[in-house]
Image 1: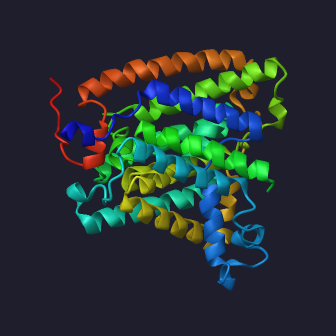
Image 2: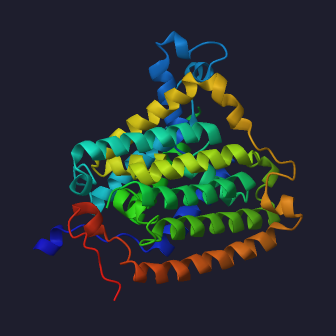
Length: 170
Length: 203
């Protein structure tokens, strides 16, 4: 009985990688570009900031993005798709569990602080590089771009160093 | 946005999210175990996908299905890419997610992922607020040797792809060896329940 309720195992990384490669290749063939994520969160940020004049000047970063709107961008629909695909997969495999992951090892306040701080660093970095792990690392390297490989090398190096300095989720 | 474009975004995104969740990439424990070298799934999956796409695009061009000039290739602003890589890598180690996987984490019930997403928006706001000072970073370190590795080296993408395939095989072999040494990949049960996270002996 208990086995019935257990989460199903993850896919073998080789099969997951092949599946991801097929999705990424199809994305390039259909749209001419790769997959991403922060294009969407940047548009959400611009929408949230659209009531704050300080962020909306003519020379501002978010002003022109706010004018384009959220739903006029392909990336918005792609991220909505990611959310739907993820919840469907997690539901199928009994891997949905409401929790603050990392709470057991870090405690709730500390886990919420690390989650916020990690997001903040990633948000800043993604705007400087004009892409995140999906858009710059995965999609960028798949076109054999120098920027994509540079991103992946520095991403891994920083992760190795910082994970030894700061206690993360484990 | 035409209905076809909306549909392609939804469908390709759905497949992307479906695969990421099945790979275990909604779990911050599994994701950050890559940096502890105990779980090589992140690099195995990414490397396989990169090589498959790169080879697929090369073959598609040979058969005239696609023109590589028509594809988006990020410009070779290597300083900007390096700063972004450092910040996102650090954010991954601290926060447990990258931007895309935080969406997957949230959709599998992880409330900490929603806090990561709020941080992501805060980081974007900080960038926008300091745009005058930070704008120069976004175009830092441009190189003129070309945007791609084959262009920079002056070789056909075939040779770069051959090296990439060999590197991918090495990631699988070396990664699996390190997984055995450092206590193996994180299983779905460990990732979901948060229980049974013993420090496995290397024996």
